[in-house]
Length: 279
Image (cartoon, rainbow, N blue to C red; front, side):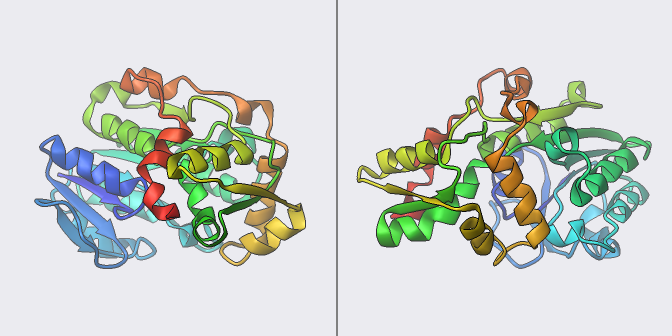
């Protein structure tokens, strides 16, 4: 059996589906009750209380570990989840980390994530680590303004990074959970090309078949909007990356191609599949 945490999110949902379609027994873990694919067991659990994961982990061979935002906060100890997994007999853990542990290693959340990576390496378990950059699904932040006003409002309109489709992250995670060849791998995951917010707006417009206007926000305007959903420190950190990506953050990684034998999906593909969110 394979346990998937964050099973109702942008990565966990397609990962759960892919594993079930591959014939695996899957336990989907989420904080709240949710619909899951047929044949998948669902367990409600809060990762902030690792002992509560025991029912989900019983009999599991592998775990996909995706941390919610509060588990990156001061005082959280996600390493306990790895300890609970080992105590439950789990043999393999695939951890969703972040590209920032490589490109900007000194931020508070990335120091904590690097420590968690180290805990996993030293746990005695089989492991693989996924380090994605920006997600294509972050464009859903614009869905309401596109629906209401046909507008995408974002800072740094002509500065891009190679964002990745969460479905590709899920596909790499499935490969790492199922294929021994990926044990001990740390994969930096990006999309196939650098794409700017203005170009993302154009792709959304093409998917909709109707015009979408791009409005460039100042950094301060963007920070005000972002801090409604995240700590100010994380908003500043995100804006630093979006406004001045480093050469490492601009690099298109070959990892998706290496693991899956195909190129990562472009943003236009994500926009076409998710066009209903913008209608």
